[in-house]
Amino acid sequence: MDTHDSDFRIRVAGDEPRLAAALAQVLLDCVEGGASVSFMWPLPLHKALAFWDSVLGSARRGERIVLLAEDSTSGDVVGTVQVIFAVPDNQPHRADVAKMLVHRRARRRGLGAALLGAAEGAARATGRTLLVLDTVSGGDAERLYARLGWQRLGIIPGYALWPQGGLCDTTYFYKTLS
Image (cartoon, rainbow, N blue to C red; front, top):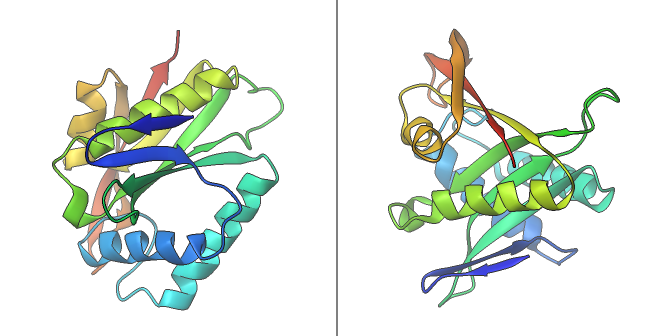
């Protein structure tokens, strides 16, 4: 899978040196910018690197696909999303979409929609027919998912913390793939 746009390229992550470091920079930027994506601010670099080392190891084992968005000019990683296949035995048709992250300098250019479309395509290619995700309620991502045809299930109040502290609500979505 390889998707091109004039501003970025989306592809499946491989076993590349320094990839965890590039993804860690995107994660650090998103958390510093206030994204509620499981981490608190300040996020130490070693913790971000350990997270991505674990995720990339899971991808090598076939438990997930990690998609990257790279800036077409610089080649820098500016976004990512995961499709996670590690689900219970009775749910082989389902996958979770997780950690869709777009660096602040690459936002408002359609990258989130492109990453989500690539994730849906990757899930379809592996025979998945149902995707599930959660996101902070009231944010840009919630509006994006709704606009792209995801079905809102409901909100869990006070589900997680903002990176700088304070509770935030989480909205769950699903999408049936044809």
